Image (tube, rainbow, N blue to C red; front, side, top):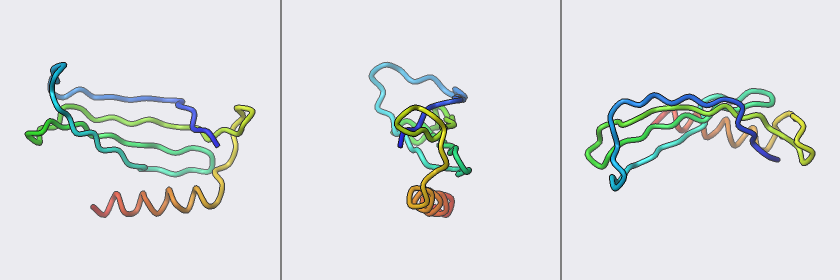
Length: 87
């Protein structure tokens, strides 16, 4: 099982400098039949949001062909999605 990136999106809100310590939070936000989306929030240690974004992934088999998300992976992703939205 591989996750191929098929789309990215990033919105820069405030600058981050090279030596800045950053906190990156990521969570699964959407689970489809053969795709899933991961959203990101990047903040400084001061709590100010520096950027937000998302990546859309296609689930691929060993040959690099799209495949449906296996049931156990799907259940875990959906469970994580619900817990991420609740926090």
